[in-house]
View 1 (cartoon, one colour):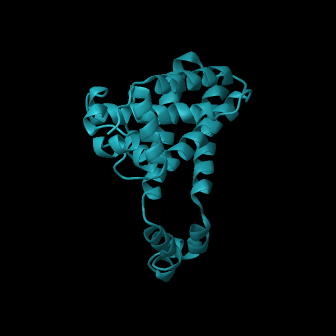
View 2 (cartoon, helix red, strand yellow; view 1 turned 90 degrees about the vertical axis):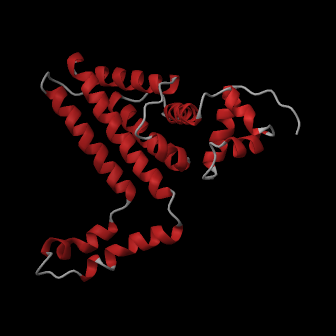
View 3 (cartoon, one colour; view 1 turned 60 degrees about the vertical axis):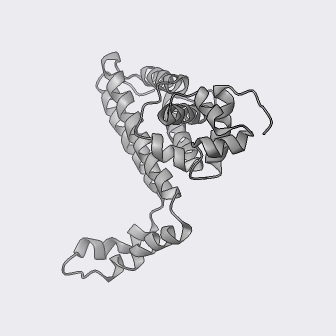
Length: 220
C-alpha cells in the first residue's frame, strides 16, 4: 500500500466524505484506511480513540453548517438560518449527525457556533444575563431535532414509507369514540412534513426569545 502523509485534517476530510455517502462504518480504521490508501493503524496515530475522531468529525459538520449561513442577515434571520443549516448538514451526514447530536465536540467549530449565537442574541436585544440560557436552549433543541432527522435518514426507504403510511393506516382506523381527536385530525396529521415541524419549532423558539427581549423593550 502506498505511503501517504496524514494529518488530523485529512483524516476528518475522508470521514466527512464517507459520512456524506451514508456509509455505516465511516469512522473505523478499516474504512478510513481504504478511503485514504493507508494502513488502518495510521488513523489512530492522530486520534486517541474512536470518540476523539467522532468529536472531530462532528465539529467539522458544525463548522460546515456555520459557513453555509449567508452573510449580512439580521440577528433573528441569522440564527434561524443557522438552525436550518445544522439540520440539513446532519441529515446529509446521517451516521455522524445522529451520533454527535447529544455531544459537545469541544472543537473550534463548536466554539465558533456558540460565539455566533451569543453575538446574534445580544444584537437582537436579549439581556446579557439571559444570553447563555437562551443560547443553550436554542442549541440543545436544534441539535436534538437535527439528531432525530439524521436518525430518520438512516432508515431504509421501505421503513420510512411504512412509518409515513401509518398515518393513513393504523391512525385512520381508530374509533372516533375512543380517540375522537385523532379521528378528527388524522388527515391533517398525515399531511405534516418534517420541514413543517422544523419551521414550527423555529417559530416557537424565536417566540420564546422574543418574549425575553420584550421584557426589556424592542425586537431587532
